[in-house]
Length: 194
Image (cartoon, rainbow, N blue to C red):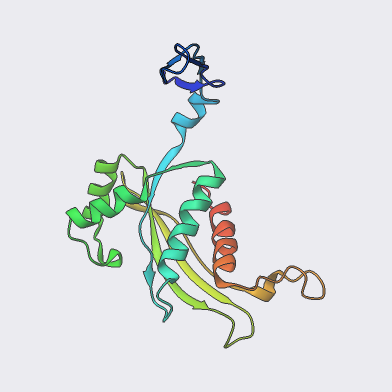
């Protein structure tokens, strides 16, 4: 069972003899905390989010959508998420230049090395700022593969427009492609049943 230590309060400082500039710690408090729902957290499936392929002219689309998935999975709380740095390290080690070209054997290897249950990957089809359509447009295709079986467990394709979320008189309109990508990805993650 993992336990965490958290410093409670501040350590007191006492000066030595007048003017000698020596300080010593008088008191220190530490409290042992046990993380909430330890059993529940250990049962969560762990996923790896691979960098999404960018099929748009916007150079930041892949990073925005990949980060949105990592954030959405983390915020959702149903899944544990592998650190993106570990994923990048694996891709460099295996000399994978294009994630879309990864074969099933590499996905299974990633699953074993990173101790993940599934891998999420896909591509960004549209990432418009709103200059062309008057509102931002984001199109994403994503899928999740169970690395133990190699089977597709979830896939979704969505396109969202900033004006899809208008409630009344442009209230609720999403005006940036980054905010729109975050919203579309949140909806996609909420729809996963696995």
